[in-house]
Amino acid sequence: MMRRSIIWVAVALIIVAILVVSRPEGLGFKPRIDASASVLLDMDSDSIWMESNGDKAMPTASVTKLMTEMIVLDRISTGAIHWADRITVSPYAGSLGGATLSLKRGETYTVRELFEGITVYSANDAAVALAEYTAGSENAFVVLMNEKARSLGLSSGTVFTNASGLASSELGPSRPPGYISGETLMTAKDTARLAAALIRSHPEVLNASSRTQMQLKAKGMYASNTNLMLPAMGGAFAYAGTDGLKTGYDIRSGYCIAGTAQRDGHRLIAVVLGAETSQSRFEAATKLFNHGFYRSLPTGERVKHILNATFSLLSWR
Image 1 (cartoon, one colour):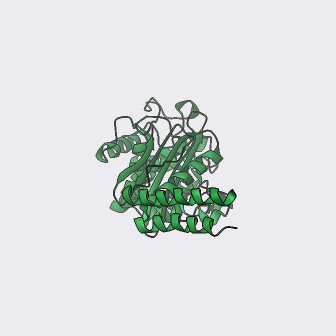
Image 2 (cartoon, helix red, strand yellow; image 1 turned 90 degrees about the vertical axis):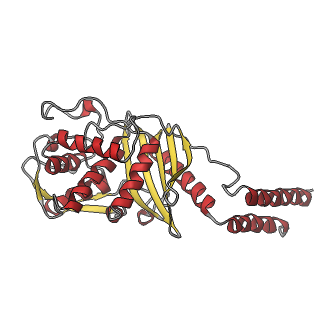
Image 3 (spheres, helix red, strand yellow; image 1 turned 45 degrees about the vertical axis):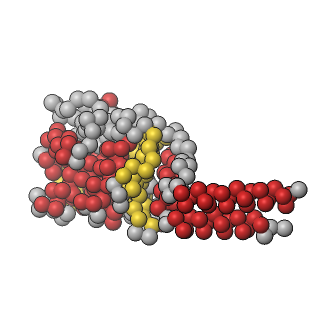
């Protein structure tokens, strides 16, 4: 009886193999993603391979800093600012809460140190200090962020109001007068497109986002990367090929990630917004990557995977 059941399963797998040949997108089977919104973007074709609520504008917490990184790297590439420039921390930057490097008013740090603080640790104080230095004020920097969003063709649903991604209620009394009101919102599709544009324009960002930790020598401080999918992190969520890009969390946004991974020269972007737990966002991104890398396999390779499983079943005793 057991043998007969195995034969029927094997027959079913052979039928699946035939369907894979006729449906190279992977039979249309898509994993269930437990999050408010998600997107899988293929960078080779610049196309969305999978999405759920991809056009819904929502808060993204520190994932906002992808645009902060973009503006800073744009200015570095033009020579407007330099990695070795020293930045003095303002009262406002030094007053921010959430994820921070505990920067204090009057302390000085290099552009490189603060940039690594953003990419590795999602530091809010580092983001604002860089914004103020780059554009003269955070408000002026936010104007650049929104101009860049429009130039990249991002939707009207994506709007930036600060450089950190913090909710306006969390910015504190030290924020300078005349600040831009409202909340930062992004769509999952726009987040994926921004991540792809950042990597294409400034691939060096991956050198920072793939680091397991950063250091502030003046403080004798080390901060670990918040992206537990990095292989070098060595934990339960490590995913081969992952080298970025940005995580985020606050009570409004839930747990978010804009991740990127590359295998055999093929790069994918996985965006998960509004997951209920830190674990579930990484699990969701893993499902998206698995779906994408399987879909990117040549048809023959996909069939081989299925047939190998079939032969294993038939040889079982």
